[in-house]
Each structure stands twice: as C-alpha cells, then as structure tokens.
Image 1 (cartoon, one colour):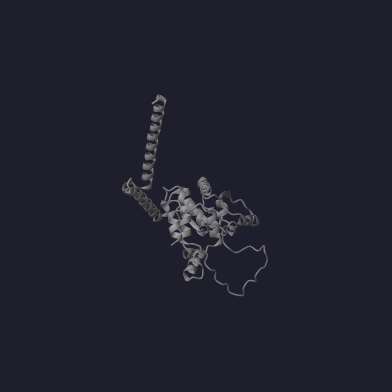
Image 2 (cartoon, rainbow, N blue to C red; image 1 turned 135 degrees about the horizontal axis):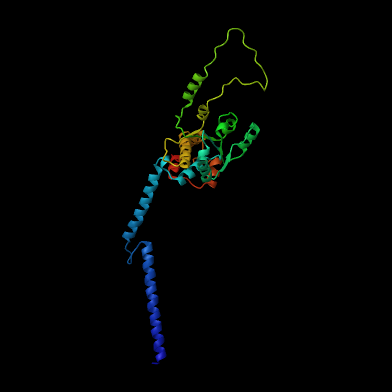
Length: 293
C-alpha cells in the first residue's frame, strides 16, 4: 500500500476521533443543562440547586412584601411614590427652613422624574397658572407659605410639611378646638346690628393665622426628628407613601366595592390607571401587595 494512502487513512481516523469527542462533550453539556444525566436519570443535584434558588427568591419577595415603608430602599421608595401620584399632581413643600434641605428636595424631584421649581408668584392670577402645569416639585418659601395666596393653589396638589422641629400632628377636631380657643366667638352687642358694608375692597375681619396652624393643614407631615438617622430624601418619600396609603383616594375604595358587588368588571381600570401602567417603571413588592389586597 502506498505511503500517501496510509497517511490519508490515518488523517481520516484522527478526524473521526476528534469529531466523536466533540459530539460527546456537546451531549454532556446538553444533558447537564436539561437536568438529566446519561441514561435518562434525573440530575437531582442541579434540580435541587435550582429549587433552592427559586425558593430563596420567593422568600426574598415575601419578605420584601411585609416590610415597613421606612425600611424600603431608595429605589423602591422612588417607584412607589411615582406610582401613587397617579394624577401627576404637583407636590408643594412648606416649612420654616426649606433652604437647608433644598438639595434633598431636588433629589426627590429627580428620583420621581419631576421638575423642581420655586414658588415665585406674587398675584393670584400668576399662581393660578401652576394648576395647569403638572409633574412639578415646588418649594414654597416660608414667608410666602404663611400667607393665604399659595394655599388657594396648593389645594390642587399634594402639600408636604417639612418639619425640622418635631411638632405634633393634630387631627381636624384638635385643630378646630384650638382655633376656637384662640378666636372665641364674639358676643352679640346690645342694640341693632351694624349695617353690612358691600364692596370688593372691604377688609376681612379675620385675624392672622399662626404659621404652625397653617402648616398643620398639609396633607403630609414629615417629622425629621422622628427618624433623624434616615436620609431626608428617603424620609420625605416614605412619609408621602405612608400618608397616601393611610388615607387613599375615595375612588379606589369605590372601585373595589363596585367590583365586589359585580356592577363593575373585575378587570376594569380607570384612565389614570391605564396611563400609569403604560408609563410605569414598576412598583415594589410591598405596594403591589397592598394595592391588590
């Protein structure tokens, strides 16, 4: 037999051996990925590892569902606050010292993808233009926040009282009781009543309000002394989330009651909810559990 022919046979044999080795390696890789060993026996070690990983992931999700809002991460707080601001309403911040927390307020606006601005309106017409602008975090200066002008506009958004002094938050009854003590009802004078004066420029017979009493009317109270070790930006977002969940919008309870009675389809969503799902970045496991409860 010629030497050239024997060399060709040896090359073919070597190529077949290499190909067989490659096929065997590929088969072993496929078997290990599919969770079975050669011979059809289950790969119990890998299956157990996958099961442990899935179980640990499920346990982690369950644990994140039951935590307090104050223990959530900055990412979870940002997602939940943005999700609960379903109407894209403006957020107004009032308080005695907003300049010291200006960077923290800007950080909150950045996290929820809002625009930060200062309240600079001096007339009611200029302030009323803010009602047509959405997705704004507006800082109201202390000397402006104790006047009646901004409050006529702020009621259309979410008012947050940034309290560095740790005042006690009073409910409506306590505030009304204090107001009656400060401004007792005057006794009727003897004799005929004074003639009423008509006119737009007539001064109102209302005494100036206490700044603390005005800030007590805010929707959210951020007591910075209660959790001094918590970052201010996280504290603001956590307080907003806690206040909204403690006093949710009426339409949520009406929708839930309607779905229970059957007058509304169980999969019905309001236009705000549909838009929020389209533009949403998600929510934390905790909020997902609470909204579906």
